[in-house]
Length: 153
Image 1 (tube, helix red, strand yellow):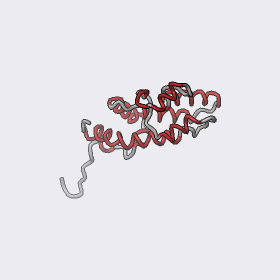
Image 2 (tube, rainbow, N blue to C red):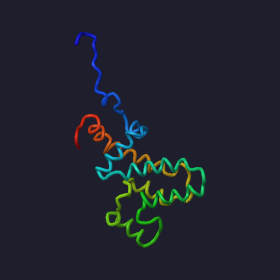
Image 3 (cartoon, rainbow, N blue to C red):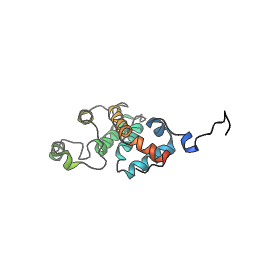
Image 4 (cartoon, rainbow, N blue to C red):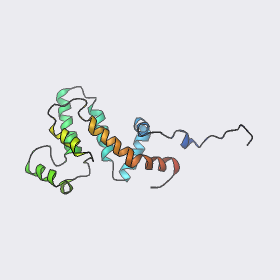
């Protein structure tokens, strides 16, 4: 190679995403990331994130409340969205009741969602931000390493 000649990086490296946001905004990369998370048994944060995104697009108030309750019962309080004795037990003994769909968010964010009476498009924003932070901190770099550098994790 002569002076001034530049070699291009392999195609895999040319399109390497710079952020988790890049991965989530690209349907192909999002799908690959979802599969990666499934392999790591950690897909619940992404599924919650996607549910929260869809929830924010709901315009019908009655449907939004129903969807919010579904999201909370699946990801925030899988033991039941109520004040039943089992709910109180699970809050006191979270490891006894955790399910594979429950997301890892700070207790203050969880409690705020459980106390929500009036749902709006921003109701899940804090929890969604926490899920994003968790995905970025714990899985983004490993995903990039595997996808773009063939580093098996």
